Image 1 (cartoon, rainbow, N blue to C red):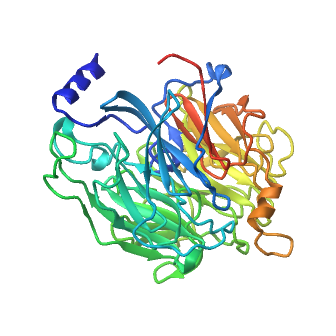
Image 2 (image 1 turned 90 degrees about the horizontal axis):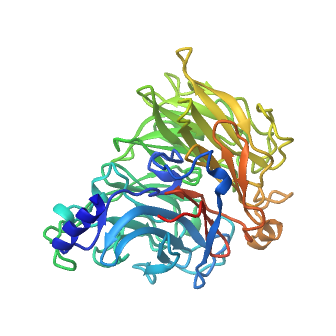
Length: 536
């Protein structure tokens, strides 16, 4: 009845779309990159045995570029538009088209494109590090952001989302129809850059992380703050006030780009940005070696940092992980990791202590040294509702160098590992809890409904060959295997589901989880939805 009443109000106001909440608005679920679909009530350990593959959706028109094809997907649970109620997904593609699909009915609703773009990028052969095309997934504003309704008054406020084109421009889309021309695009990052991810703060500052120095572009972060237009209560009327973007500011690493699938993590208030620089140097923190940097979200000025004691030599394509921000017991913490396989727990107020080398806690090295080894993708951290225990989950690439409780055999390629967060002694630490069986280069884990989803990507850990040279796309694809989804009990680590042979291609993108569903996107342009069959 509540939704029906709200729909009546929307109709009465002649509004185009109303939005309640984005269930999975960005990589790792939110700007904090904590990998937790916290509000989901559809899945649980008790119902996990009913999980099946619900559908596959093939985006037939997408042209893959290198190892990239479609991006990970994002989800809004309830959008009310001119065709009624929808749960919508948005999935980007290397070829520049963003697809808006109905999550329940599995059909393409609308599309938007960033091609031909505002600037031309010279075509070049894709490599494993520089595929070309669009590389970052779309992003929705989270619940803490003012742009989740796009400004304006009453139910005339529009839900918005954004993506970034190969031209480096950020495009604003309406949720009801994915129209990306109603607000002029704005320059954010260099044309031709490999943007690993977009992020958005609670203060509507957008941050693009660039990696691998593609097309001669500098690795780092590029930020601009958006002021949404105010609009009439009817679609396609002139704006009451115009949208604005602030002048772009940048932070360059003078080395490798920020690590991991999410690029950056942002605190809940939108004040600070956290990212890990594998190599490089700066005027404030000196030389970077898997250095966790704390930056002002608006200016990208360095406020603090943590640099591990020692790191092995960097190889192109080495594993890297994006930090995560979480709060426990009223205190804000940062999770970080490195290519030595350490997981670090840091105090957000002073990440490295007074000497910038002292974490609250450092795990032992989880992997044996080697090219491609380390902590990968992004973290997840979630609280078990029964015991109120917080778990920290990480994707490890390479042979495991330590044994976790309940070991399921030797780990030679990679695994999902879990720790319990423990502050009972007065100083927070992470206690090993469980590890998965062997997995092929798993992407970052996600948690939903007391479960953990892990995906074997099927890709090799190392992108360099025996002589130290970067592999070609063809060489990597020759080694690749089909991806495989495995779901675990958060508390025990016991396997409750695996996808078997359902996935027929490798995966190069993060998982998504929302509204009782887990989403996998694969290189053969396929979006797969896993969940429990039910009438909603």
